[in-house]
Length: 125
Image 1 (tube, rainbow, N blue to C red):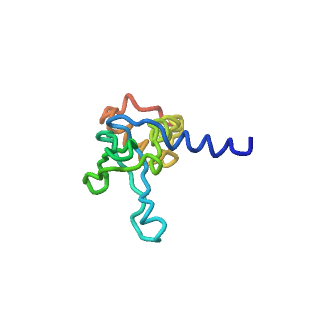
Image 2 (image 1 turned 90 degrees about the vertical axis):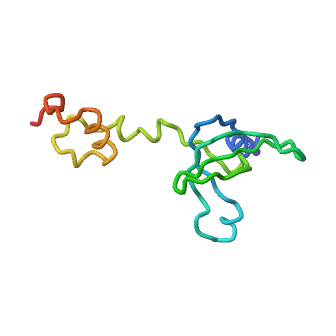
Image 3 (image 1 turned 120 degrees about the vertical axis):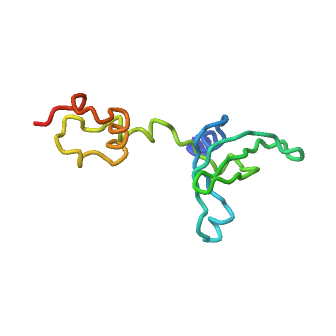
């Protein structure tokens, strides 16, 4: 069973993605050459099979540059679950009187969704 962790990692790397999924992508060539910009966040636009190899590949939008990156190998993609992105908001200490205890993302979300109506904000102690 020494090969089990490797098998589990391979299964994770080969997860199927659907349009709209957020993923972390590593450009393997840039990574191994020590070049900057080897890792980026992308949004899945479509999947397709390579005509010669039959391998499933993905076209993504690189979010920081708003550009399409075609033919991405899923072995170099990892999912970015919504739960991870929303963790700071979901665990924001709303009973704390000091909003400094919350991350900027949590404060921004609260301000956006609660508006300027201070009567809906938690009471300050």
